[in-house]
Amino acid sequence: MAVEHTEYGTFEASLARSRALEKELRENPEKHKILTGDRPTGRLHIGHYFGSLQNRVRLHKLGVPTFIVIADYQVLTDRDTFETISENVHQLVIDYIAAGLDPHDGKTFIFPHSHVPELNQLLLPFLTLVTMAELDRNPTVKEEIAAAGLKSINAGMYTYPVHQAADILFCKATVVPVGKDQLPHLELTRTIARRFNNRFAKDQPVFPEPQALLSEAPLILGLDGAQKMSKSRNNAIMLSADEDETAQLIKKAKTDSERRITYDPENRPEVSNLLLLTSLTTGRPPEEIAEEIGDGGAGQLKRMLTESLNEYLRPLRARRRELEQDPAYIRQVLRDGIKAAREEAIKTLEEVRAVMNMAF
Ligand code: TRP
Image (cartoon, rainbow, N blue to C red):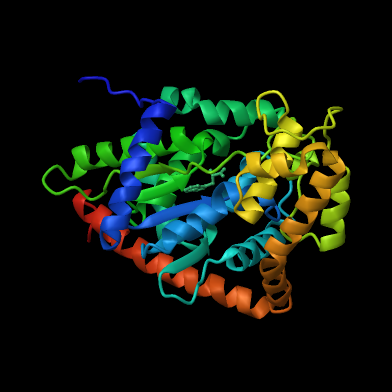
């Protein structure tokens, strides 16, 4: 037997494919289905918003049906706590809707995978299509293990990428908007789809090989200007923060000792990140904003960002506050999402059983 290995691919190749794919989505939205997802580990911050959320909303507006999986089981792979999962799911749904995903358009489905048994069941045949060596080589899993400093590693950590393949394939998604760190999982999903079809469904493939869609959204650094924005690094502005908190956080953001403001991401990451955020919230080029501020210095830049960011987020935050008052509505959104996801999953599992000679 020829040995086939999962190729964990290159970033450049994925980016080139993503550009072509966007064009295809714009031309033939009805031929596609988008699936994307998050772990419910807390509220979202502006880095999530400008990095991925905004892109999802934009893609969805092309008219492509969109499934959003909340990967609640995945949370258990690298942390001890489960007490906050339900609250985190709730807050995540609020952030999604406040950011512009509309669960009432009949094409947006938000669901936690723990509520879709037929999706979870796909995990079992899928596990037989990958080798231990492949799971062990997954670079994202390796990084997560290192980052979490785990004393012992549960088997869910090694196998969640296979579960993620079930998250994606249960609805036969064709497009998966993700960040760079998720590319290995997408590659594994494609491998599983291909191997499943080759082994059980040679004449008529059951699964499409879904494509990753990398957004060209900018990387938003934290207010320390040193690393990616992240709640756990304490350098984030949450979407749910109020205007005063936002002002306080920006006031404390790190800058450098040069008075004159210039846009130079390479040499002046802190100032450039604040300029980038001002640019994203005003629609003006960062160089132009820098020029305008000139010798006004970091103080003026921070005042400008505070004002533009608070203004930009005002409608989202107002919507967020309304949604927080209505937990019954959020539960209804989840129930609707679960129902739609299960309908897809039931159909797919039936096909899977049929081709595997397990239909009775
Ligand atoms: N692994 C993703 C993360 O850690 C979350 C996720 C689970 C996901 N299932 C997915 C992302 C399916 C995209 C598609 O963020």
